[in-house]
Image (cartoon, rainbow, N blue to C red; front, side, top):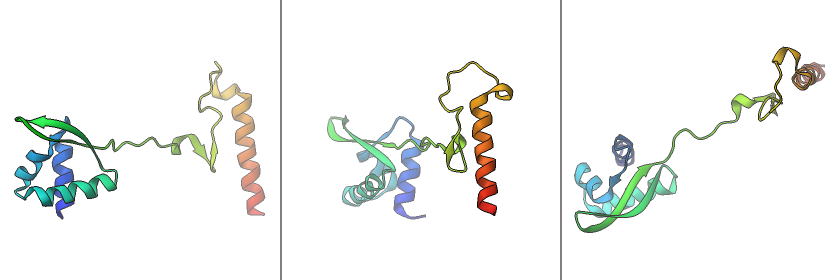
Length: 115
């Protein structure tokens, strides 16, 4: 495991965040090396950094970026959004005209692409 992975695992372990000056001490590295590691993690959007104070010293509070990025995959079928996504109609899937038309168009498009 390289230094970036180790640092990221430590940051993730501290759910409320960890101060950068504590991170380099926990990793047993110097502050310059820690700064370079943090810069790489920031560049890759794996962590966030906020100014803070720890034991009277100015430092940064490091937090892991939210891993659960919103995914629209469950709302898609054949690269088309389901009409149910954001629908406010009070209906049942068995009787929904919009859903039936959408499914029919997917079946038709699949049939056209196979020909």
